[in-house]
Length: 154
Image (cartoon, rainbow, N blue to C red; front, top):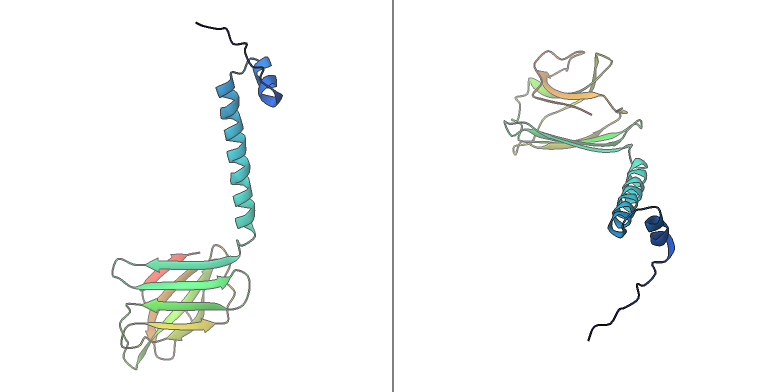
């Protein structure tokens, strides 16, 4: 025995979508796209607030690495390095920032026997800066005198 079951009316926004010729699955797809876009916008808006916090990591093919952590535009940054050779007493590693084609010496250091070092420098990084580490004479240099051991752009 077969019975005709009356079609159940579709209510609300889906009914309005169907009235304009959109099939039910099309309306559902549009809804998913709109909801997805709103969720994506919300995530972007939330992450924009922390756009000034920076944790930048770089590892070169030779194994040397560095990590810089700071708040962009504010004085103070933490630098950690690893897999660097420990230098003799007549040389140091010098940390540089390049902004507007001008290299600025930020500070110097030498690594421990494990090739590591970490410390803090008073310097305000900005988006677009390049950072580099070079080997310099013990007294330091006003501009890099050797090729960068490692370099990256913020």
